[in-house]
Image (cartoon, rainbow, N blue to C red; front, top):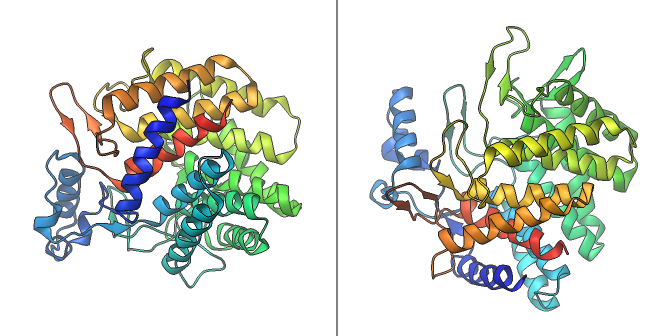
Length: 391
């Protein structure tokens, strides 16, 4: 049964290596000087969103070139570690590719902070914030940190563990921490004080994993308080809002793959914290059931943002594979592993090109075949390695 995933993974691996990890990103519009020179913020945002959804890649016309994305590098690093541990890579090949990824990550890190950290390789503009290129985020830094810990598990080289410990200092010292009655919430970047559950949990999960190596109680204390806050905000149906304003109570109710980020984080916290409190497990089970029943069709096809069905997005598919594989590892419920495989099979049949890469989005009447490196290839590669390692 694993053959379909292994064959798909090998084709994708060949494509990624041929590209030397470089590619376009849905949100890289501001890498164009023609666009960044526009003074109107709203016009910049409109053009960025046009790039996100256009099935035609206009980036070369605007002078945007394929680039290396730090988050993609971190995801690839984790994927290659899992491939090596599964016997899909020779030692020399793994050493070469992992060393290349580490070198690129060190080169691309953001400087001037308490520890190692990373941001996007482009200016980032959305409805509520602007972040210059390289502004470190808790999400990107945590995923890259997970990659370094995966590499440490394979090599036992302490320098990789030390980098992970350093990332913890960035999270604790440089991010803004909102203190609430039920716990804490880490900000997305050092520039904001936003309360975003998936970002909070990803950072807290990373702290708990580093704690499992270092036994630094401060890390566990921060992690537990962050999860306590997010757990207190879980709705009766098992879901979370995307963002909230604790002062006004105003929320951004965006239900999509970010639910999977939170589920992954709870899996990691339960695994690495050593706590036996059933409260976290019960919250995880509720969240996983909601995610499975509401975010996916029975054939494995992912929905967009509830209540919208389309487009089917490769990132959403990959996240489902990862989340349900991890839920299986915690709960041992075989239905979740089976469903992760159902999602992967649908994605391979419907979204993978003969060249090896995966398409971006599928709509009712057309398919957006732009081969985004971070959003698509890095995520689905990591997802497939979870399936291969989960027996």
